[in-house]
Amino acid sequence: MLDADAATFTMNTNAVLVPASGALSAYGIDGALRYKVPLPPGNPYISVFGEYAYAWTAEKVALVDLRSGSVVATFPKPALYLVANDS
Image (cartoon, rainbow, N blue to C red; front, side, top):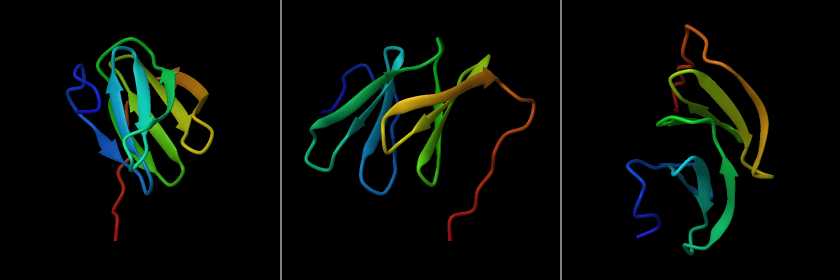
């Protein structure tokens, strides 16, 4: 178990991303914590596009650089959602 408080997780090419307790944690394939970054309050939904994760809450979106583990930007949630097709 990576995080007992987590309700969901998503993955990118080399990490498991777990939103819980007001933060986004990235765990390596070996289960080691790589980084933990604070997120806007709320129950976030995480979308991964390339080397970035979008943490969507009811009011804000945080853009997280998955290489550095830093929040690049936080902005009000737009009325539209990003949709991607992985092929």
